[in-house]
Length: 173
Image: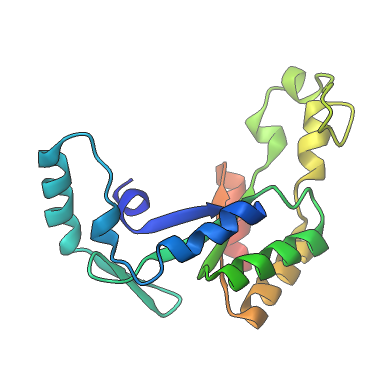
């Protein structure tokens, strides 16, 4: 989307990725529009120069400093404490926000795929579905993470992979 390409530099939760923040500090979003054709870049910049919005009190737009989201995804491995440590690392690196993922695995996958054996060195359970469930936080854990993010002054986002997850996340707000 336009927003992702122009305004949001996403950094990985890996320590080397988090350190990448300093490269962009104080620079404007217009310096980082990547496109394959000069017309696309000019058209994109003209269109985005009119668009501004506010996220958690921070104005985001083409004439603003970069807004950095640390993409944690599921690198927390289903561990709330590890997730908090990743929030802390993102905050220390200068990210304004962190992003997780939420999915209702039973609605995303067929029954056969959900129950398929998962033979990976990174597997947390014997089937793919059970493995995916191990990476999900329950409602109380999401509330704990939401409150922790507020406490340390970082905005928490999440990608909802399905409608049920979108409803779940909306109910947390």
